[in-house]
Length: 340
Image (cartoon, rainbow, N blue to C red; front, side, top):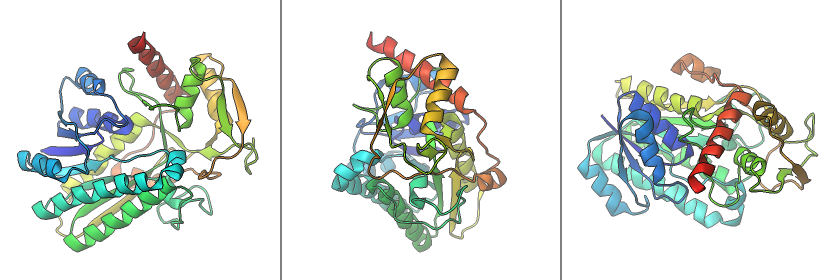
């Protein structure tokens, strides 16, 4: 059974491809390499002993996407194809709306025309905006997100809900919090292009001397140390949740519309400075930092209630913050060997 993984050479996508291959799924990757590298394909093969089918093109190319569906019997899709930087989304809103929504719609057109179901959407806790209470569960009110990136995720969810209801499809929306870390083999990890937008790769680059100091965006939040709090989940744990969600969809033989929604997180929030401290303890490396003004689009605090995923998918996060940060550092050292 073939599963289409869009953005499958990206950070979360590549880890999910590994877990799919380890569970004997046939995997077809479409990735335009705008935020990934071709060598990741070989590393996936080195980890799993299997090489997924790979098509390098932009999903806005409808005719090429059509050809992929013609060439393979696709039984489901996990969609990671999206621009994802909060700050950049504020600067380039049209790019984000076009890429993140048009690509989704193009895939769904193929699903509709071929009567395919089983669609998993890579969503985000940003759809909650600044939630009224913690931890955040799936029943929390969706607010207008602070960032354009978050808005595209919320709009994508609405598109998928309407699609499922109109065409009696099976959809799963996975709202995950902040993925961190790397594969234990050190062959896969987060690979930011240019200056990192996410905390952990910026910590890595600061620790290795690529960046002079870590920018901490604000220390005047209403938190214990004044810095923003997030729920940091290990990327391999996150990848395994996608496989569990896919298996749940595919074993559901009902012809009724299915719209599953799951939060994926650890259930614990950590501040920016707590992450820095955990990294330093895990790896015996210091990280110089400076306090900067708050960044537009950021919220104060967000961490998950992921009990629904545990109850219905049999999944939960198992890796500690320090363990995840150790894998991230090992990945950073691996990248240095590739560039030296």
